[in-house]
Length: 325
Ligand SMILES: [Zn+2]
Image 1 (cartoon, protein in one colour):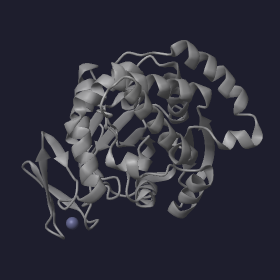
Image 2 (cartoon, protein in one colour):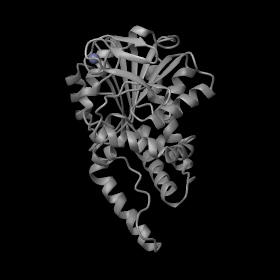
Image 3 (tube, helix red, strand yellow):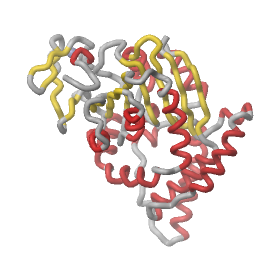
């Protein structure tokens, strides 16, 4: 195998033992599991994927056109660019050529930024619809040898211990039934001193207060417009279930996974509000609503709010950096 990875990168995600490649199938010599290609990608997801994980896989594959359209609206958003730039900059402190694993890569836009910065990238997702788009995006930009795209479950990674210099999860941890299992897997596959970056994970208060209130306001708006019900029930099963993460939650998860918290950064107050109002209007009343001016002004206010002690505990999202000791 050429490119970002070598053959001895892999191990059986079920039993943890060695795999051997025969033709187009990776075979586990211990538990006899087989991992063939699916949609021309190696598929290392468990055969019995069920529950929330299965619903997420189906949602993010079936609704791919919706997410592509959504990303068109996000692109160029000052809020999006500012806070993605910030967490990507942490990874950019790694040596050029470092091997970075992205879990739940989605459409692959953050992975593309790492490729452009000269890193080798292994992209994984549980949804074939998303990772096929990511691969197409990276190939269309000329990145063929420096990245690999695999189907994998973040809670049972198909990689040998200590392989990666960095790992990235963007708005991904809250989609998992067992976030701790995924963080322990990340710890296992990182080299000593390796860096995990979490991007834009939701805080708890928005799930407790803001989303229910926002939903009621949206329903009221629909009634005022004489429209029946909310047609845009596009939130994934995990997004409905999650309660988000407080700063304490993230720090405690890192400790239990054996990772050391290095940075926990607020990601958006006013700018996030403007971004999400624009997103909601776009989704429900026609794509393309932009509040970029408000987002830009919001970022200036946000940078001031970040320094305000207790207030800094209540951003919309977190960016976080942890180190594997
Ligand atoms: Zn096995």
